[in-house]
Length: 334
Image (cartoon, rainbow, N blue to C red; front, side, top):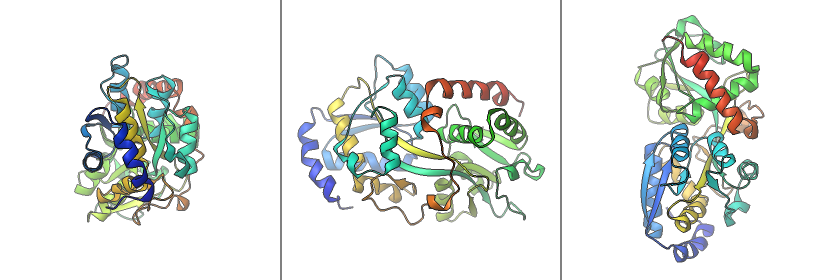
């Protein structure tokens, strides 16, 4: 893929700033997209990428555990809430990329909310997908429909401690319903849950193979299964839903800070953001000059809530909600 003009202009400066040949990348999107990005960056800059893939919650916990002796340079991808918590806790460092001027408003707001310790790189709406060969009419169209007893032991969602996708669901329900009502809903939903997975996208892969009927995921992950030929129908819940601003952060005190900034600028370029589609990732990119994949769910067609990223990405709120989930939902018998 040809580099867009802005990326071409940035590359000589990027290469000139490099002081070593390595970048340690913590990646929180799908394995294939992590690999595509890492390989493209290495080809274009000559910097060797040492990549580790893990879900958002797992990566936050890893960075927190390494505080004071960080091993990673950049955390790329994953939902924005744990990135904001890391920023609040001083685990990531301020950086204002020259590419900021090219970004969507929601990506810039993410940067401003964090004191420029993180930035938005893509967006995607929460929802669910169902296997049309396993689900009879009436098809589920709303969050409330997932409580139907006919779906007993036939719904999967991730654990919000490990998965940013599932934490987005938890925070979405609290904002849609109120906190106590949201936990009542999740308690009822538990009766239909067959498994709380570690990865946020695992539930829809299970639905695609017929292991379960319904997977609660970001809508673009459901679309990806349909594109690959699975009988998955994507649903934007009728009551409204939350969304993610997938984010990127430079880890404070990482071993290769110059290369971290090189990655950061490159990953915000149109050409780098367009690589997602080649890895069957159909999020909406944050650079206004990057082409949105035609398969990507249109955010303007989804009833989105006014998701409060500052509150639900704060250390206090996120820690409290996860502790309550552990106490009231995670402790329930399966």
